[in-house]
Length: 308
Image (cartoon, rainbow, N blue to C red; front, side, top):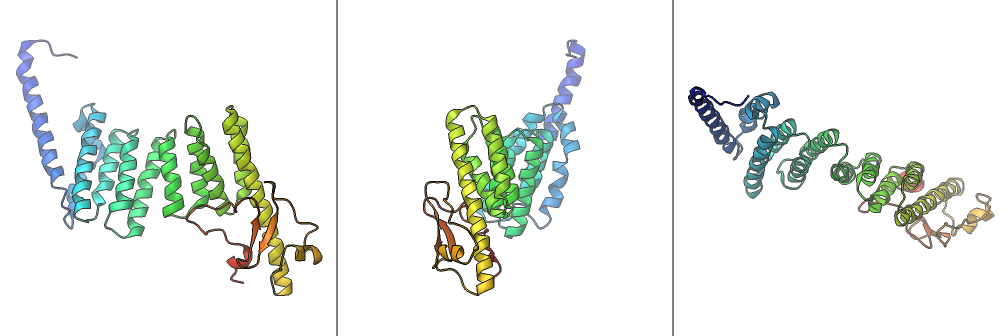
């Protein structure tokens, strides 16, 4: 209800003054968060409680979230310049998410600050950064940006290729228009996880859902790449069987035909065929590289995985 009568003005002004004093005291305390003391985050943690913040905001949740975001940037600048731990980034991100769960940039900033600049040990900062992104995804399951970041985090920092594939799939579905690179990354993640067949199913679903002819063409090419990888892995299994029984690797894939392990060398589906690289001890395609994630050697042929 709007205050109209003049007799309420003094009370209204007193209320505004009290709110200003409260906000000033909170600002002073938050400014003391950096530099971090040994128990700094414990001393300041009460400032980040969602219930208290909801009362303090008096309905202006997004405005208070913006305020905490600016304070988080100030805190980050001081900590990174002095190569200090960034534990309070977690509390800032949680406070912002309580006030405005849809503040996508806050999750992204907190994640980037932790994994790239936090002075704590890698396992701690990677764990906390991942939890922030996962909270962001729970609150923003329609955000391709969070899906993309979480896909990269699962791949690069945690080595969870299957979950990385799921997140890149989500990024592909949510990006407008769909960005084919995410479909490619999802396929590579699932190939690394040893599940290229799942990638094949997901890609076919994406083709069925896509109307754009250029995107469909790109996805169909990706489907063929996955099929090529599946055939290559079947040849990996035949090479392993040959090695186990004979104690040596074939000189070429033709040796597998002679020994009865395969009937013929199949085409790779991309206009080439499969060959055996004796030096690298790998089945290769003459027309396309094996479907692997960049910066990763997670997938190993059976004989390399077993140390043969």
